[in-house]
Image (cartoon, rainbow over all chains, first blue to last red; front, side):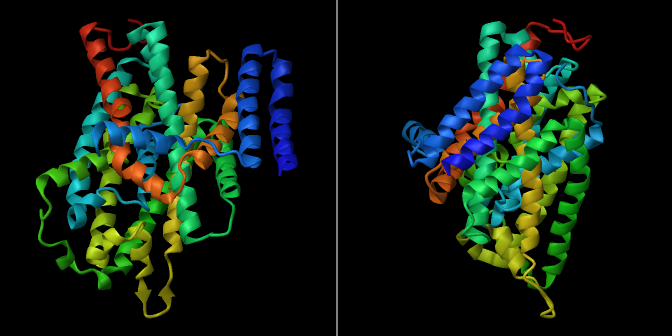
Amino acid sequence: MIALLLMGFGIVALIQIPSLIKKQWRRELICFTILWSIGLVLSIMIAVGITMPPISTIINHYITVMFGT
Amino acid sequence: MLEKGKISSFQLSVLLAGFVLGSSVIIIPGGDAGHDAWIAIALGLMEGLFIAWIFTALVTRFKDKTIIEINDLVFGRILGKLISILFVWYFFHLGALVLNDYVHFFRLQLYPATPKTIMLLILMLVCASTVNRGIEVLARCSLILVPFTIGIILIDTMFLIPQIDLNNLMPILDVPIGNLLLAAHSAASFPFAETVAFVMILAFLNKSEKGGPAVSKGLILAGLVLIIASVRNNAVLGPMTAAYNYPSYQTVQAIDIGEILTRVEILVAINFITMGFLKISVLLYGTVLGLSQVLNLKSYRPIILPVGILMVLLALTNVGNTIELFEFSHNSYPIYAVPFQIIIPLIALMVVKLRKMPKAEGGKP
């Protein structure tokens, strides 16, 4: 599973990074790398079974407490 | 300008109608009003038209500018960027919620054993590919898909005429007025006012002055289709409508033309795939274009794939289970969406009017 993930993320990086380096778009390269890295870390965490906080459920909880819906 | 494409007002109307139909083709709004759902949808459409007037009046004042650039001009650089980030979050989160609707529907009704990730990734790849080709391609896709979907809904309705019992809609205005208004607001927040995502697209209209009428036409077209679908569902299923999670799917299951034409409910799923694709693409487009403008990037294309992956990850972890998704959509979403759909655009419009920011001429204040 992790190997598949790494392969998928590797392909995404191979599609984007060479063209960004060629165009010398540093800012775009940094943004891409940050977003790509967040995605990779979160995917690995999900793949190894770490439970993420369910954001909509948390929002639902706070809105229910605040407005009593 | 990050986007060089231009779309016509007709394309905008059709794309907007497709966006509104989005997940509404399976989850018809106004369900809380029972058999008066069609009245709730009509009232919700009116609220939606008012909200659309707010954001179109704001965006069309500034020619060729998206809400992100307008926020910078109206609220100043720092506050403007903060508000822009809120909008980007809303588009991103809404995209993940539509992906949730998509995956939960297919897991419950059609593919119980297929992993969620595979379904989400396949859809996201198509959406990312479309967004990568720009707004013109997305608008042209809608010209093919939306008439197809509306055609299927109307044909389904015609095939259901033998099963329709209009007595199921009686008595009219049976629900207490408070509940009806709540259902109407719920119908406005999902799906009509979600068209606030078009604040990222109105800038690419070839004739900006036609933005308001184009948005209204799209909303009314989608509203009429939803009213027809709602009347059909309630007239066929009767009081059982409330018992189903996806009433349209159940209703179309009832089609039986001489025991030859049966089990055509897959058409509802096809409608949901095509309209869901349009909605997710518009939201992904809004997210990546907005984020690129907030971060001053030269192009939005490099971040489409990573943002798409993050949207899929949010969809996977967004809610614990289907019940939590329905609870969020039913109880909290009509409140959660208010700041993004009404309050922020309304404040921005008031500031623009008070500061007498000029109507266009390049949008310079």
